[in-house]
Image (cartoon, rainbow, N blue to C red; front, top):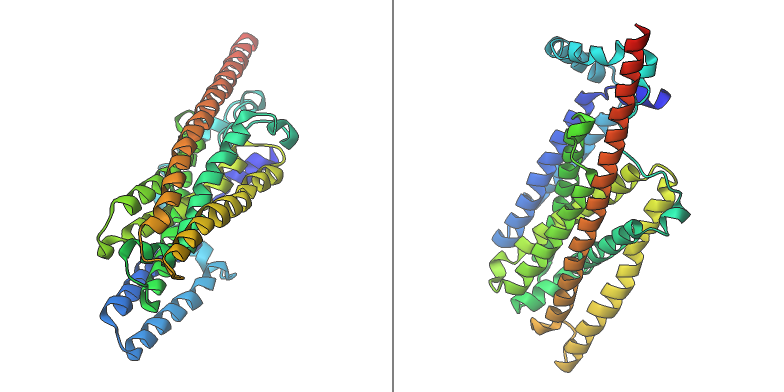
Length: 354
């Protein structure tokens, strides 16, 4: 009962709106100024102006957390005047007896969850399928985004200067932020729908995997260096997707020991950084660079094999996501059917007493 009452509360939307506007502005502004500096070689005056705008924007952002009452009061007034026609729609839910509400009370806000403990989940294929998916996706993201300078040099056949390296770093950060925002918007949008009409959260597992597959394919097929940053943008979006998905999916589908479930899945990052980054990519790149007698390899062959292997891994990750999603959809249907059956039985019981 307490959890459902808490979930029914409306957060201060004005604060989210201010933060959202600032974040969107930075997402658009930062890559634009980095691209202008990298490709137009602007003077220090322009660079200082860009830096001042960035600092001011970041300085305004803490207003979101300031204890200013007007951020809540004014927004609530707007909401009360614009949502009066919508509010009565929710009233019938609370008009029934408490016995009729019990099976639907928490379900209106919380998706169906597995009730297994962490050690029990370790004995299921679902948890290991999620681990494998994160291992492949996070590992590929980690390899590409942390070695972007060397991969870009190998793909373009030219060394990367500091301006271009800064641009790649900014594209990574901005794309990651955009991916997190998109995932948050998707979660809020589906959570506001009725329980029967919601999109299962496990469907979001496909977004980072598809992004990484597309990124790898583009890296292997694009030869024009001017459009090589495009795969980085797609990969950065996938990085944001996977950061949000890891938290949302684990905390949504597992009711017990969410911390242990999350830490176990996050452990995939450590495993992939060693196996994919250090052993697969690192050893192959070093071997090919030494064969050519250089430290920075400018040949596509230095990175093609690791990309092909990781592309194959992510294809299997897609299949793992399909299995997890299908199992959760079946579980979701079972819970909803049980909820509907309990509600109908209680309704029939109420009619008999009437």
